[in-house]
Image 1 (tube, each protein chain N blue to C red):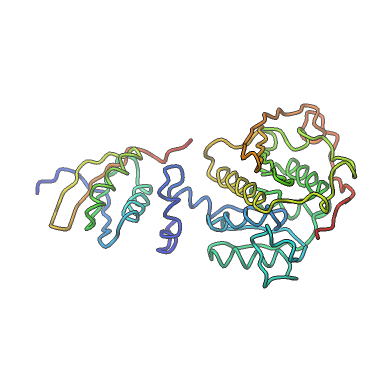
Image 2: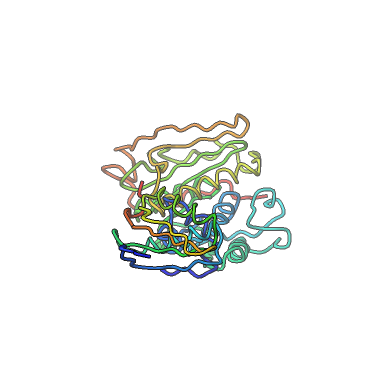
Length: 86
Length: 267
């Protein structure tokens, strides 16, 4: 698997279900700097769709969603936005 | 900060909100809020603040739980009759959430003790049931520049306003002096629909959490009025009064005033 994207941090949240998949992904990306890339490893199929959607909703950039096995997805997200302030 | 596993689960529905997130939840956990009164208003305010994870909640109250309180004061219960309300509320809130530390202040607020009690808190919540305390709390918050979430209830209605000293009007900008004794119905004759204190207290808790997070639009310069029978909300603009005796350009009140208590019975 040719992967040009530099990963700054990986979290393995296998075993987690929604909404904690996104909760944990969000807590991880909050601590990162703008432009850094987070890899989220999940075995929960709904999360492979919901986590990227929620990340986009919060202004982050989903670079890639790889299915690495029958029950394993790697979601690659770049931090494009600091927390929304109103 | 690093949340514990329990905290991630407990606060997950906050963390999911774009306006809150992990760093917003951390602000809530670090916040210090003091409740003036653990009665009809203070009970739900403290309950929701404890659930939200406000790290330090002060409770100022020197009354004991009476059976006539339980129609509305949800921090207490029948097994706590005769217990100091501050202790009862502490038990309720800390049982709900071990992240919360409740500091009890079992005394009646006066001009002599109020500043010392509220100085260590970020936000003050007024749930008092009498005018002398209401004015004392307002004046002390103006002098110490503390955010004050003020509210009052009467029969089927209630009102809320959030006071940011120096930025918006204070309670005296709205009502310069307390009404004279006899002008307003005393507590004994007024009556209150229990749930009204829940609605208004919950609105106060909402204002507190928004202020902690710095999100949305507070009731700054706005008095919210709610009527249960009409199920109507109204918001009235309240300007700052340049002549306000406590927060105006030339304040005449420079020391706290202990007005005469003219309705102190709670039966």
